[in-house]
Amino acid sequence: MYGAVVAVKDLSLSVRRGEFLTILGPSGSGKTTALMLLAGFEAPSKGDILISGKSVAAVPSYRRDQGIVFQSYALFPHLTVRRNLEFPLEMRGIKVGEREKRVDRILDRVHLRELGGRMPSQLSGGQQQRVALARALIADPPILLLDEPLGALDRNLREQMQGEIKSLHKEFRKTTICVTHDQEEALTLSDRIIVMRAGRIEQTDTPEALYDQPATRFVANFLGEANILENLNCEVESDAAQPSGTVAMIRPERMCIAAQAAPKRADADRRQSVIGTVDDMVYAGPLRRYNVRMGESLLIVRQHVVSGEQIFRPGDEVRLDWLRSDIRFVAA
Ligand SMILES: Nc1ncnc2c1ncn2[C@@H]1O[C@H](COP(=O)(O)OP(=O)(O)OP(=O)(O)O)[C@@H](O)[C@H]1O
Ligand SMILES: [Mg+2]
Image (cartoon, rainbow, N blue to C red; front, side):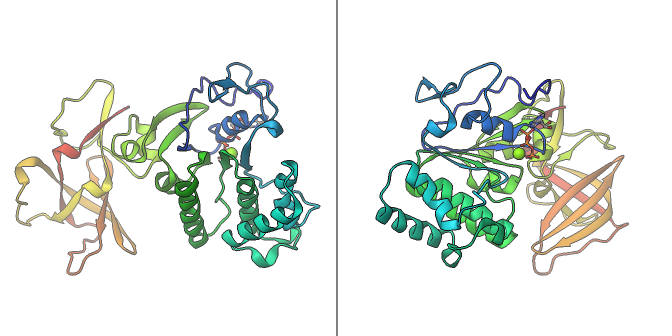
């Protein structure tokens, strides 16, 4: 709690040794607060935090063996990049020669070799972020806590650093808790993902299970795109019985779009097929994204761009079909 503000509530999570766990959620959902509790910068008003079975709630954060990347980077403004990186080593009593070697090695790893002599204020946001990541890693702590570690990077660099973090994790298997609002980053990096919403955990699962079997409408919409099948002009068919309090959902890439008169597919008996009207088509490189009107709903259909495909235009009547086994039920 911050004064009277309850930032996170009933949060209970466990991370396995060597696991990459991501806390994912929209802005203000309590991700940073959860991480600061784990890091020891905030004290929980209730509850406890255990590492290897021992309570650390009363251990100040500087006494814990953990590397942290803060959302605001929090570099020491009066120290050069090199001195920033040396700091955690100095704290641990590592000798100058060894410090120099480790700083060189990590600077190479984050592609900042030439910038060691600069002050943080002379770096771009992305460069500062990489220094922060390097500083968290340099003392080789068993636990890494990362708050939006790649948030300030452009797309290419972000993908490159994602690969870097992934390979570092593969190599050293550090227990990592990473906070992000970036779904793709969460899906690519994590062993498990915790989805947060308004200070509470909405669902915890592996990336694949979360995407393929979201428990709630919120998770379905937050992780990727979802078609919620309500207010259509037809009944939704499915293989499984619909639990009460749920609504049917299907992912846009599970839908197929075809001309109304196109021949039926070979597995047509396992599919539901409906007629809709194209509302809009957006070309996005390897994908085409259609909005198709059905009843009062707009359904999203994602199709891979392939040679010789038929392209539909707004106003075209089309046939949508999907496998009944691809229908999911999510809590409404
Ligand atoms: N120092 C504070 N005092 C009062 N309220 C705060 C404080 N810090 C955070 N909050 C509130 O607690 C809630 C959770 O904030 P938190 O920073 O954990 O969110 P977040 O999920 O990290 O968001 P973002 O993605 O924007 O970083 C928000 O409603 C926020 O306004
Ligand atoms: Mg935050």
